[in-house]
Image (cartoon, rainbow, N blue to C red):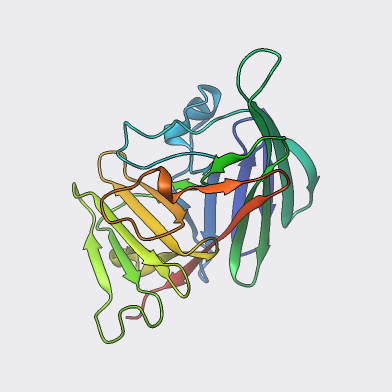
Length: 261
C-alpha cells in the first residue's frame, strides 16, 4: 500500500492514497528533539485491515450526518489518485458516481491538498459536482487525537459571538461533547496538560458554522462545516445543494503549541 511522507522538520505526516486518502500519523518534533504523536498513529494491522475507525484522520464527503457514532456513514476508503507530491505538499483526487447500473444519479470529484508551512499542516477538502443533476453535499474531517494521560478539549468562541464569556473547556473521559460555533476566528485546542502541549485545530474556510462532535467511546472528533446553527441535532438542512459545476470546500489547519507554564 502506498504511503506519502511529508515533513518540514517540525511536523511529519503520513498519507495513505490507497486507503481513503487518510492520514495514518501526524507527529511534532519538540525543541528537545522528542517526536510527539499529535494524532493517534495507525498500526500496520489497522492499515492492512482498512479499518477506518483506527486511522488518524479521514476526510468525510460528500454526505455524513453526525447523529451518533453508530449513525455515521462510514468514511469511504477508496483509492485516490496522486496528482502531485513533494516533501512538504501533496494533491489527491477521487471521482465517484452515485447510483446503480448504467444510469448514475450524479457524480462528483473530491480533492485533497496537504501542505506543511509556518502555520502547520493545511488540509483542503473540496467536493465538486461534475454531473448533470444537482446533489446535496456536506464535508468534514474525522480525527483521532492521541490519548495519553489527562486530556482537555478547549474551545475558543468566534469573535463577537460570545464577547466577555470564558472559553469553554471539557475534560475528556467518558463524556460526549457536541457544540456548534460560528467558524470565523474559532479555534479548538486538544490539550495534554501533563505534557504542556496542545493540538490546535482551526477551520479557516467553510460555511457559517462549525459542528464539533466528540465521541468518548471512540475517542474521536468530527469537524463538520454547517450552513446554519442547528437547533436540535444535525439534519439534512445543514447540507449545501450543489448544481453542476458548483463546489464546496473547507480548509483545516493542524498545529502544535506548548502550553504556558
